[in-house]
Image 1 (cartoon, rainbow, N blue to C red):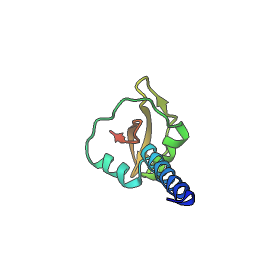
Image 2: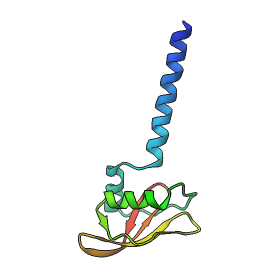
Image 3: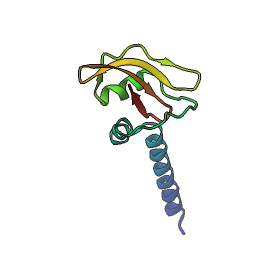
Amino acid sequence: MSRGLTIATIAGLLAVTSAELAAAQMPSAAQSQNSEREPQTLKPGANSFAESQVRDLLGKQGYANISPLVNDKNGIWHGKATKDGKPVEVSVDYQGRIAAK
């Protein structure tokens, strides 16, 4: 096997691994929409999202008028927002799952 092919193979593996890591950290719109429709338990965990990232995620899912968000001791963000003109309490876990009441 030539050295050029080996380097290209390693570079390809690194690119795939980086893309998978990025995808795992921020859920897709489809994943977040499914989490709203299906009741799921939010999971505690070390939260790596900044408040601005959680706000962006909520905004992309149709939430507006998002209050300041608070990250609790379990790594879950909590706040208030509106969706479809109705007030809701929102929570977002470390995996980006959204729960609204």
